[in-house]
Amino acid sequence: MLPAALRRWLRRPKRSDPRLLAQFFFADERVTRVVAEINGLDAELDPQQYLVLLNQLHLSQAHLLAILERIMEECIPTQRHSRDYLVKFPEELLVDNLGNHMLFAAECLLAGTFLEVEEADGAHLRPQARNLLCSLELVRTVLREQSLSQPGSYPEPVRALLVQFDRLFAEFELSYVSSLVAVKSPEEIYRQQEIIVLFCETVQRALHLGYLTQEMIDGYEPLLMFTIPRLAIISGLLIYPEGPLSLERSPEQMSRVFSPFHNLLKKIRDLLRVLSVEELCLLERSLCTAESEDPCTPTTPPAWGAAVPRADAPAPWGLLEVPCATPQPLTCTAWLGPPGMVNDLGTNRRWGPQPPGSSPGLDTTPGACSSELRSRYSSTKDMLHTLFVCISGVADQLQTNFASDLRSILKTVFKIVASQAEPLEEPSASRGAHRLPEWVPDSTCNQCSTCRSPFTLLRRRHHCRSCGKIFCARCSPHAAALPHYGQLKPVRVCTHCYVTHLSPTPRRAQSQ
Image 1 (cartoon, one colour):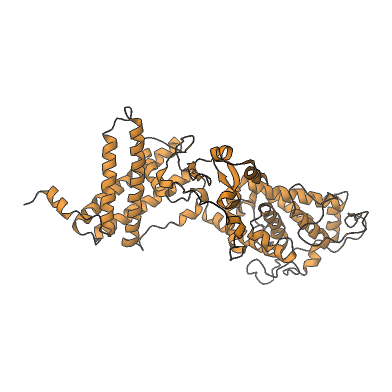
Image 2 (tube, rainbow, N blue to C red):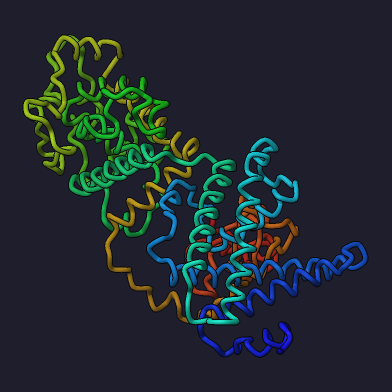
């Protein structure tokens, strides 16, 4: 009878075998060999070789996981554990090699090293890490044996082990990321989707009224990062009062993006309801201009369209200087029509189905209440200035306090409202342009090319568009145009390229 080692050698698959189990055999063999080399090496005597082997281990493990993922897709496609929780993660964490990061974190936790997590969270995660790594070792053993016997089939015991590993991996991934960053609840995800709908309706209305143009949206104008949230506050309070900015809800029932401003939004809504058509139009146009401009700056012309009707030239603000004792002009409530109906604002849609007898439109503001609100201000100009400051303050704080959420919302909005056809690049832009530098693959670099800080789940990789190397955010903070590569708009570059290789002209493109 042949020895076991000889039988294994005779049954060894060929490297040219395209079957997944055959590929898994050689990937697993590579991981085992690198681990054996690391265990037999004294890191203090040869630290450089130790780093080289660690990088090889990282690459071989990533390759092994990629093949294992393909095996599970082929073997248990309908039994995979749900990955719906990924929508709860911040966008910057959703990278291709997230699985490899998870296994590295599990190994660190099992060894007693708490990287990026508190000690209490690490102690809680350690049992999950142990179960995950034990399941992985069992899967590797079974798949190796299967690749030596029948590499073209997956018996039921193999399927059961793969299902178990997939479940343990998903549970650990959710638990570990939840200990690092705050993840969204299903209710918060739904509320964020409501805000996306509101922003899209706001853009459509702004296009209809001429506040924005399709060219601005297709060109991703930076000013829209401020304009769209500002206009959405008015739309959410006036046009769609039953939507995500409904003030009938408690702050706990609103999205966490707007809930801190619940009381301020109430005051903004009350003031918006007493504005006339011209006043609302002037306010919205002013909100579409630069950050520092407001309706109280007489030299500021209306933006994005036709001029707002005004009185005689010497008194451009004469239209707004309405004494509080005189009868008030037509208000927004009267202009919008009966409750439950929205007219002349670019849309005739309601926010979802309304029950019989409900009034989804604006509430009627009594004349006495309207006069009382106006009497608190020295002039209509002063009231519009207050509205401008409050609305801009709320919208602009979203950029600071909820930057990740707002970025994700606006990214989705632009995908929906932008034109589908990509604008053609001008021939002059690419004329004489050199070939773009080849990017260093993410999988081949585990530390910043400048400061040598290791990349982690929170310290992300960034490619320099000028040299193609990988840096951390601190070592690649600059943006500059690269006309010799056909990049006319500012793109990310590392500090070395920015200081050494770029002329002053491309650098000035950052501020322009």
